[in-house]
Image 1: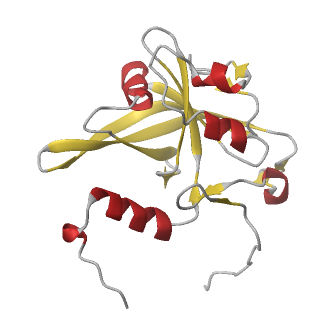
Image 2: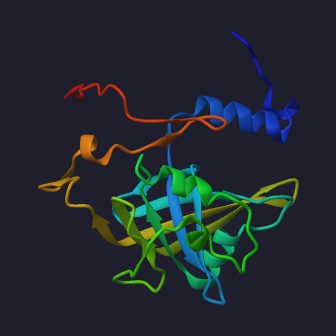
Amino acid sequence: MIEKDLSTLSEREVYKLFTGTIVPRPIAFVTSLSEKGVLNGAPFSYFSIVSTVPPLISLSIQRKNGVMKDTARNILCQKEFVVHGVDKTNLTAVNGSAASLPPEESEIEKTGLSIKKSRKISVPGVSEAKVRMECILYDHLEIKEDGKTTADLLLGKVVYAHLSEEIHDEGRIRMDAYDPVARLAGANYSTLGETIHLERPE
């Protein structure tokens, strides 16, 4: 076995280790509103379920040189955001939203995605996603190392969900119709591939 002491690795080396081994990762395409009303859109793969009671998801947004990203700043300001599922039909547009733009420019406008009004929150989503979850900020934790904040861990409470009719089947999600895309390392993504069915023991 190759052994690595993470205390001796650079930030880049740890990033490559994590993104290459913690795979596949679901992608959250997040829309948020700035103080000036600019609709921001960005993808994040440091994303997961936290709990079902209450219905919480987690979103970790890394800072660049200690500077908070637009999405994190917007969420902390407005206390609302929308999380969208990513699949092969919207992957190219979502990937395009990752471009570095100034806060006064909207990634949604640049990628040509269609704005969709939310039901319970003021932040709109996009209609191209088969899954759209309206969230309110539940909690925020600053991740620190050596006294410096390196990331913002955001917990969002899902208050409303929108599901495409093609993927919804009596309360279950049809994976073949959803066909989500996951993040791998570098510029690589993956689809579901083979599904393995295995019952849990009693």
